Every structure is written in structure tokens, then in C-alpha cells.
Length: 451
Image 1 (spheres, one colour):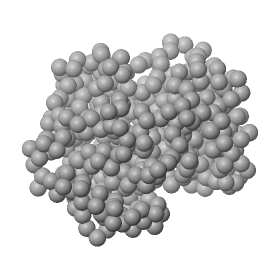
Image 2 (cartoon, rainbow, N blue to C red; image 1 turned 180 degrees about the vertical axis):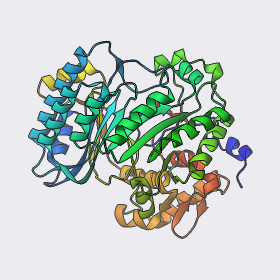
Image 3 (cartoon, rainbow, N blue to C red; image 1 turned 90 degrees about the vertical axis):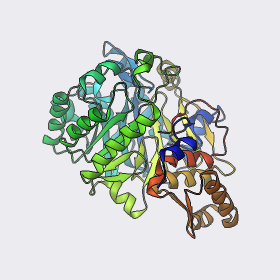
């Protein structure tokens, strides 16, 4: 059994590592990828392809202090209306470039607060997306819903447009913690939003909560998890709060002296984790939990679990197209990111061009290492046979690298005939082991605590 002393010595409590929702990670993107590259990659898709589409809405009525996402506050809907017009133009650009027969396996609206949009704005976007590409069979349409910013009319529009997975942010139900993170969202407000979602027959519900928040204790996170369980979410993301006030200026409002230390963060995670498992949820990767019937649980059992910019997914499409300011796309050739600032993004789209300003073209061992890290993050096992078969890797070289990792981590990872495996008690080290597979300069900014 691994001890906390070992975890500490191996760097769990003080290492800064990526979350590995991509490889290489976004800090390694460069201007080698531009709008022409993005356009060429779209045009290179095979006719009849299935792709995922992400629409980013960066606006919020209020800016939560804990959030490090690229968002902006707005007191009126005027800039939102203008932005929706830009998204529609961007969708027209995409439609003109897409090969014939492309369908959507996933459509996700994220932010920001997508439910800030009026019903009319929502209808216009839904109708335009349908013009660009229809849903494939068994497609998923998901939206990030702020319980403080939703009503029946907006839900009705989204459900009529095919919404079949709703995602709500909870963070923590404790009143004092909400005050400290600038997030006023009581349990009753969240319960009312969930009831509206369920009443409309939306079959799947996601929820996000955070551990590592100021003044959070094991007793408080226990109460939050128990309240969340009463809502019966199908899928839960249990993320560690990343305190990066030098990057997200609003986090300077959060008193750093009230944040739990690394050892206590691990205890908070383990407390929440044990409650989800006790209630029958399946553990998915390093920070997700899902009902046994949920798509993530099925994907995990069948070896189809994947990881992308939204976290864990059962979507096996090789292409994710991101539209909107700062949105990131993934193609078989590499990554492409839009202009981060809303003004710059809008100017490019209204000039009749995509707004891609940076990205990464896969080369060298990028695809191989990307898959190795994804295997580790999803299945806690790297299978040599697949890497040799699909990526032309050398079995001998892989075994040597895996053996070096075992030595580096006190022989806690297991090297067997299949490849490299992380037993359950070693899994807190998953992101550190993934970092050992990362061939890029890890001094780049943008990383967070390993726990």
C-alpha cells in the first residue's frame, strides 16, 4: 500500500502538471497554424465524416471568482446579440468549407454562460447548426446550464432543438464557501433547475463540483456531495480547484490563506470519491464518476473511453471543431485555436476568414505519446500491442521507457506482458506518470497542482 510519505516524496503535493486534455498542451501551441491551415484541415475531411462541434459563449452575467476560464462579464445583452451574429457568420464559413455528408456526433455549448442567450438567439443558433450539418444517429447535444440563468422558455427551445444532456455547475453548496468564491447558488436554486430539466425529459444530467476551495472541510464536502446525490446526476466531474491568481486576476478576490494545503486537498478528494463509489457510481479516469448505465461507464468497460478538451468522453470522433473566441479544434493533423479576445475573433470572422491564430501540427512522436497519455488517463494502462500496431512503435523501446518510469516511481507502476499499469492505490500519481511521458518543455505556464 502506497503511503502519503511516498506520495509526497514522489511530488504529488508540490508538482505542477498539466491536466492532459490535449497533447501537446495548449502552452506549446504556436502561430505555425493559422486560418488557412484550419480551412485546409476542414476541407480534407472525408465526405460523410462524423465530427463533434463546440460553440463557445464567453459571456457571464456575473464573474465567479474561482473561474479561470476565458470569460467576460456583461450587464446587457447587446454584446451577446452581436456575438451570436458572429457565431452565425462563422457557421456559414464552416458550411461553405465542409465536405458533403458530414454529420454531428456531438454538439456542445460551453462558456461562459450559454444559457445567457435569449430564446430567440438560441433558436437562431440551433437552426444555423442544422443548416451546417445534421445530427448523426445517437448524437448528443449538451449545454452548460447555470441554474441562476435558466427558465422554462429557454429550456423548451433547447429541448426542441435536440438537447439530451444538460450540464450544471455546482462547485459547493455551502453558503460560506459560495461567498468566498463569488458564487451565489443555493441548493434550492439548483434543485429547481434540475426539476425543470427532468420535467422536460432530458435523459442525462452532468454536474461539476470542486475540491480544494477556501474553508472547505471534509464535513462540508460530505454535505455538498450528499446534496448533489439527492439530485441523481448521471455523471459527475470532481475537479481540483486551481488557484492561479497571476493568470486569472479575479482569483485575487479569494483569500489564499483559507485554501486547504496539499495533504488536505487529497483528503477532500478521497472523501468525495468514497461517497460517490459508495452510492454506486463507477470511477471514470482520475476525476469523473458515472452511473453504471451512463455512456462513460459503458465506454470504460468496452475500451472506448477518450479524453478531450471537455474532459472524459465516449465520443470516438477524430475531429472536434471549436467555434467562437478562444475555442480549440482537434484534427488528425493537429490542433487549431481561435483568437482569444472576442474583439479580435469578431474582426476576423466579419472579414470573411476563420479566426485561427495558433495551434500545433503533429510531428515526430506526437500521436504516439498523445495516445500513450490518453490510455494512462482513461484506463490506467498503456497497451504495447496497440502502440506497435497503430503507431509503428518499437516494443523494445517502449519496454525500456516503461521500466525507467517504474524505477522513477519506486516500482509502484506495474510492468507486465501487456505494458504499463497503475494499480488503484497508485492512481493519485497518474498525471505525474503522464508527465514522465511528455517530451515537451514542462517549464511552460498553465499547469496546476497534481492533486
